[in-house]
Length: 457
Ligand code: FUB
Image (cartoon, rainbow, N blue to C red; front, side, top):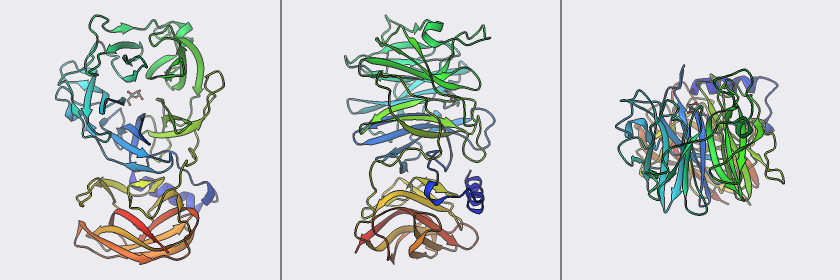
C-alpha cells in the first residue's frame, strides 16, 4: 500500500494533471485499504469505523476493524484497530461490515464475523466505554445466527427507546433489541422483511433476486421518515434507498442515490448529519492497487431535497470542504491528516500512547488541511524517533512544493521508539493554509513522528 501511494503521487507530481489547489482528499484513508464505512456522531466528533481489506486481497480477506475521527470533516485521526475477529472466541475470520452506536455512555459494536462452528457469517456484538475501544465480546456467542445471509448489521435507537437491528443479504431481516443492546426480544424473534418490488425496486432478469436490494443496509430516521439505504442491483452494486413512516415498514422504493462507479463491485452506505450538514460515506477502489477486494472509504457532503428525498450523489476526489480550521498552536497527532502520502501508522510506545506515523521515506509527506496560523508562527516542535539516518521535516504551505517556512532536522535517536522533541524556527507562516510536512533525507526509512506543534510569534 505504502509504496503504491507514493508512486502514484510521484506520477501525479510529474504529470501536468497535478494541481496544488485541488489536491485530492478522498479516499479518507490512504495508509491502508478500508471498506464498509460506519460513521458515528458522538459529542463534537465524527467517529468513522471501517472494515480493513488486507493488502493484495483476492477475496474479502478482512481481519480487523479500524476507527478514525474528525472534528472538521477534512483531517482524520487514525486511532488504529479497536476490534478484531479474534476478540470473538467463536469466530475464525471475515471481519466484514459493522456499525457502532452509543447508548447510555456505552459503545456497542455490531459486527459480521465468520462463525467457526457454522462455517458461515454471523452477527456479534462487542462493547466498550470508549468510542475508540478497546472493545470486548459482550456475550461470548453470536447475537444473531439464522442463515448464510447474516451479514451487515445496522442499528438505530428510535425516539421511543426501541432499538432495531437490521441486516441481511439478500433478504433484509430485523430484531427488536432489548434495552441492554446485547440481546433481542425473543417473542418478536427474527422478522423477515417482505422483499417486494414495491419496497425495494425491480431487478430485471434475476429470478432469485427480483428486487434491487442486495446488502449493506443503513437504517435511520430523519424527521418522521425512516430510511433504509443499501447496496443494490447486484454486481456491480450501486446504492439505492427505500423509506417508510414506520421503523418496521412497509418500505417504499425511492430510487438510486449513488450510481455504480469507482472501481469496486460492492458499495456500502453510511450516513450522518453533523453540525448542520449531511454526509454520505461509501467505498470504492480509488487507491493505487484498489478494486473490489482492496477498497477505500470516501465521503461526500450533500443536501436532502425539500421532501426528504436524496439527490444523486457522485464520487469525487475532493471530498467535503473543512467545516473548521485546525489550530497549529496545540499539539496535533502526526496521524491526523487530510492526506498521508507514502507513510504508514503504527501503535506508539511514546508516553501519550495512540499511534505514530512511521515507515517514512524521502519524498513522503502529510497534508494537514485548513491550518490557521493567525498572525504568524515563530517555531515548530516535533516528537520524533529514528533508528535510521534521520532527515528533515520541511514545513511547506499549500502544496508539497509550496513556500518553505521552516526546516526541522532530525537525527538518529537510538531507536524507532526512542522519542525526542526537536525544534526549529519558522518564518512566513500566517493566515490559513494547508500545511504540508514533507520528509526529506537519504535512502531507507528516515524517522518516525508522533506529534507536532507550532509556537506563535
Ligand atoms: O466487506 C465485506 C462485504 O462486502 C460486506 O459485508 C458487504 O456489505 C460488502 O461491502
